[in-house]
Image (cartoon, rainbow, N blue to C red; front, side):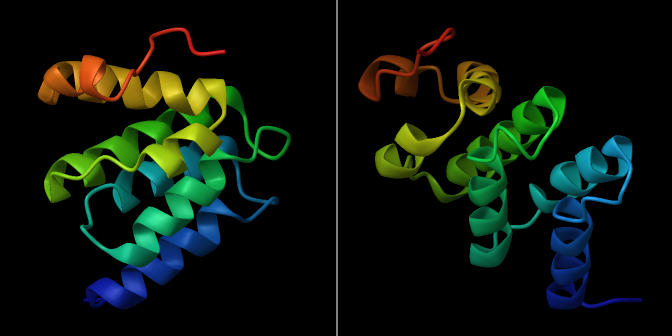
Length: 114
């Protein structure tokens, strides 16, 4: 069985592999969100800013993963949020709404961001 660091590295490679199928990349983003790890979070944020590189559904999944890690850490990163694509922000919104609805107003998280 692979240790967490190796698993995270492998998932990041799949997420950023332009030759991987969209479903594989989407699954990689979902699995990365299960780790409370800086490398996983950084990769999901980086992917969430790549509108021209990722399918909109993958961007939304990456945003959801970012929000899940923020919730685990009880820390919302407004600077990182401001850099996310609108599709990734939509993913953040849905997860925050379900798990930390007080953050919606506190951090001005919008369902349909500009």
